[in-house]
Image (cartoon, rainbow, N blue to C red; front, side, top):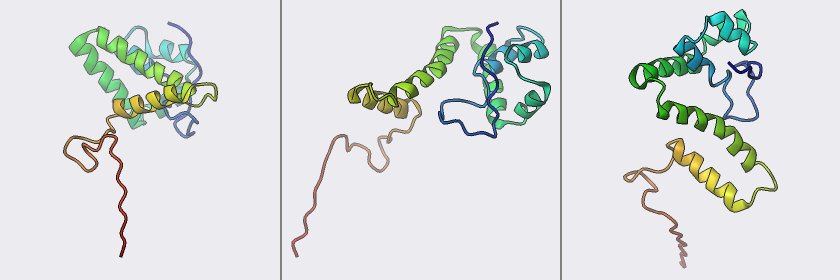
Length: 142
């Protein structure tokens, strides 16, 4: 088990919204029961008090429940591994978007992709749907 960075408390809002208040692999390792909970927490430098706080965090609880369900349904499947990579790649995307040396076209593509992955694109039947790249100017003369 690789040692990760220390726990970011849920009370501090990180500059990067892609960061959780806990290492993304923590709920998965706990769900997989790869080691006793104290050993897993020690590998991430999480104290007993910090772990108790995490168990009250609805985001952590949901991540743990999702990990358990995914493991029961799929085992350690390709999809689960890809999901873990995608979570980690959000950090890289954030860094690239905020890097002045990244071309604007790359930034735009990353922003569009993030919006799509988050499910925030307009749906086919809602307001703004079907507008695509439409541009309209109305001039009232009177």
